[in-house]
Image 1 (tube, rainbow, N blue to C red):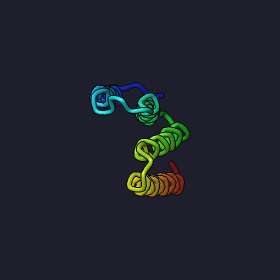
Image 2: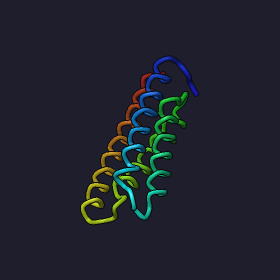
Image 3: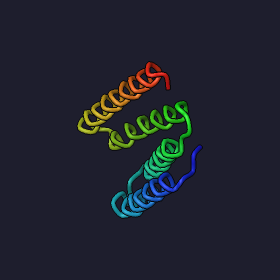
Image 4: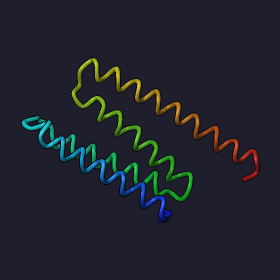
Amino acid sequence: MVFDTISLLFSCSVFFISANVCWFSVGYLNGELFIKRFTYLVFFFVVSINILIYSGNLITVLLGWDGLGITSFLLVIYYQNSYSLGAGLITVLTNRLGDVGLILSVGLLLYGGH
């Protein structure tokens, strides 16, 4: 894990935005049956982003990226209807494109001798 000024700035931004999301969700999802599930998903989303921010090697980057992809899919399909499922599939496909980009960049770095 790498703790520097930039990563701390990004992490503080993530915590600020997620705190506002949780604050807004208290009123917006009032009376929702699965509000605890939503809160846990937001928590795991923030943890995944922070793993990605503070990662010091490729393994933790991939761990944070995959955690981010899974939790973002679960957050998008929270209401479990056909519209959210379609949007969730677009989210999964977009994350797989990001996986391809990460793998290609690693291959290019190894090919370049870094």
